Image 1 (tube, helix red, strand yellow):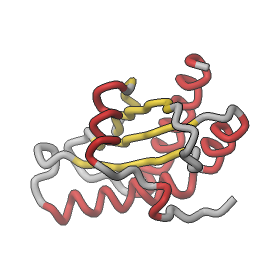
Image 2: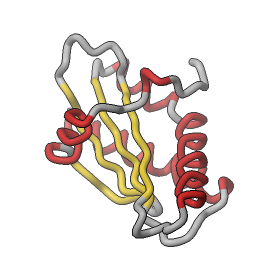
Image 3: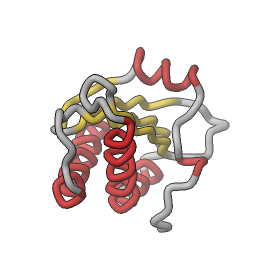
Length: 130
């Protein structure tokens, strides 16, 4: 499995993001709020599409928000393989949003294990739905 995070694995488009936030289920795995939605689109070939966001209310400076988003994307990129294999074996299409809810910037050494826990909790929640 490739450890890259290419454009086609990113969730984009206003309609799909709105649908994720209106119909999706959410849980908190601090410092992330994870919103996920299982979609039934047969034409879709990518098993997992993901987006990351950081609120302007939490981190005022754009430099800080961009840094946290880079760290989140890197942590996801390194740990996504189990989630993608899980989705492929169960023939699922998952849409994800990771929202940063902490008030301070965490280091990569802190974010990476928290991302692993968030992805494990996500797999448990998806397994309950299937």
